[in-house]
Amino acid sequence: MNTYKKRILIDLDGVLNEYGKEKFDENCIPRIKDGALDFIRQLCNFAELYLFTSRNLKLAVMWLIENGLDKYFKDVTNIKIPSYLYIDDRTVCFKGDYQSILKEVKEFEVYWKN
Image 1 (spheres, rainbow, N blue to C red):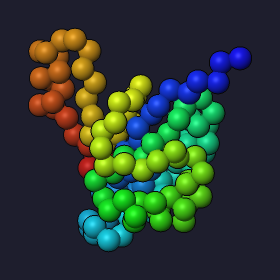
Image 2: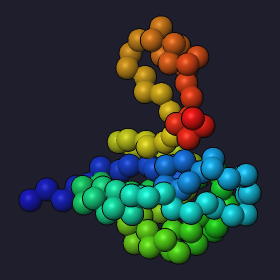
Image 3: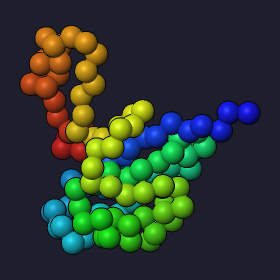
């Protein structure tokens, strides 16, 4: 039986929390996004999860604990470690075509700004 799980790096702000709905405060992480806990529970069945954030790492760990997510993550990092996938709200996926990605970059808008 193959028990290998692929590593997935998940961004905190805008993916797992309600980032962008309130004024930014580096000492306060916004509330958990609806559906995030269930999403993480399902994802950890086949993936090894790492939280990625540019925030204070201790604050991020406390946020995970307070929201019951800590047991699903292997670690919290501010380094883009090699991973199978990166889940982030500020990402465009390069698919081999520079012209199409230029267009995507020029037209990019974060979903929570709408």
